[in-house]
Length: 273
Image (cartoon, rainbow, N blue to C red; front, top):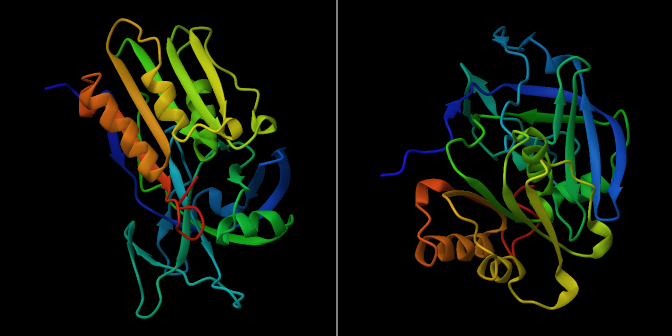
């Protein structure tokens, strides 16, 4: 049995109230919201419990952003005691999961990137939010180490996976080899990514007309020698197809494939980014 290439660690969850510091257009299809606030450091909760400083050691760590229900001003908040999340009677919080693009513990700035195609509670908030607006976040509740012990990387994802992919490429050792496949809605959604020299990045515009662009790209990939570690993210059904191909046709051990469905076609809004 293959030993996992990543180490999982659970993290106590804290609920933090922050404010929007900056709003920047990364591309025509992605907006970066920088969050800040004293509660990114250590603080004491309203219940009198000490809370740890925010940390995000893993490239694909995610947080939950909490939004008001339509027509309301304040969000429904979870109850967090001893790092565990529970819910008061009544409605559950309206939350969306998003990757931590960057966190600077010195300046206490947290960057979150939002894909703007389609409509949903998070994307609509990102379009209209301005510096000074409040936002609650919770998490990350778990984090994983960088993959180790494999010969090369296969990374495949759509627009929603770009924040995690960008962070991964920035944090990989300089001698890492791999193939990165990114499916974007249009050519002008491409970004300049910092990556080791041994990483080959391929952008696949969705308007090219291919029904399953990432799956097709993986099927036609020149397969390097050695054992790969695969990281897959994007639309739920597409991610499952890619994983199935790698397991059945390329004999990649399931333990060497991380896969996440960030959103589901036909659902209202994105599950995450």
